[in-house]
Image 1 (cartoon, rainbow, N blue to C red):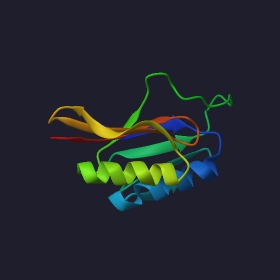
Image 2: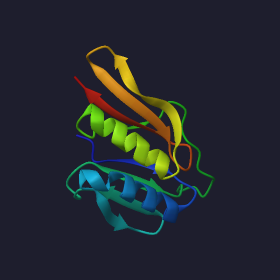
Image 3: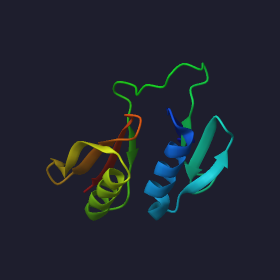
Image 4: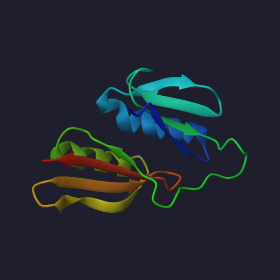
Amino acid sequence: MIGYVTIGVSDMAKAKTFYSDLLADLGAKLLLDMDRIAFVGKSMGAPMLAVCKPYDGQPNHPGNGNMVAIHPGSKEAVDTFYRKAIDLGATCDGEPGQRIPNQFYGAYVRDLDGNKVAFFHFG
C-alpha cells in the first residue's frame, strides 16, 4: 500500500549515504537520484524511503509525531540496525527493548537531521 515515505534533509549527500549504508543489509540501495530528491529501496515497485530538500526552499525540520518505522526481521536485527544507525551518526531516541510484553520490541533513533526512525519486531 505505501509507495514511499519522504523526509526532509539539510544535506542530500550525507542523507543518501546514511540511508543507503543503513538499509543495505535489507537489500536497499539508491534507486533514483533527481538532485533535490532521492529514493532508497529494493526496487521502484516496492516501498521506498525518499530524502529531499523541501520543495518550498525553506529549511527542513523533523515533524513532531512523524516517524519512519523499519522492520528488519528479528529482535537481534533491531539491535543491529540500532547500533549501525548510531555508528553512522544517528542519536539515540530510545534504546532497544521490549515495549509491549511478548508483542512489540523496538528501538528509536534520530537521523542526521533529527528525523525519527524506529526499528521494530512484532512477536
